[in-house]
Length: 171
Image (tube, rainbow, N blue to C red):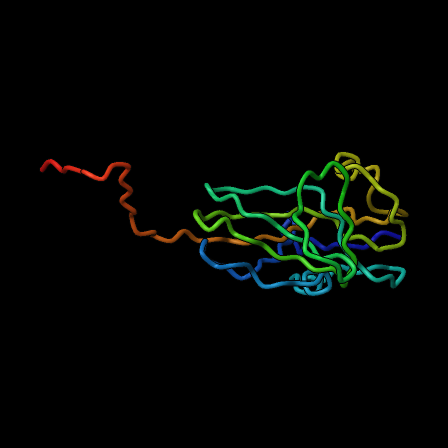
């Protein structure tokens, strides 16, 4: 049976917020999926007692920043999270972090459903958003969850660049 995500009376998705960082920070803290799921205000429950992971289906950002989410699957190398035409399955030990672009602030959000790790057959991001593929006997929670990070802008010092050796200034 599908994991159960309680919306805690809010009617909207629960969010796990990474600690805020500034645009010049090298990266956010690294979090396992278990840390994210267990860090929610109401922890999702799998009725069958299966380990839980997540199925990411969308990435969105607001602000001028152009940072990148990265995943580390099965202890491998860090890889950029891009082009989600199919949902990305991350089990409870896989890791996630965010790399800011170094120039701008933003708020970046990943949208996902809790996954019971029972069925790992590929599913398109569009199909995963269809309610017919979630809840009940499926491997994905009916309700979505999110994880986000706020990257704050820094007041960067101006840089004067000259393309000629004889610069003149007019006051």
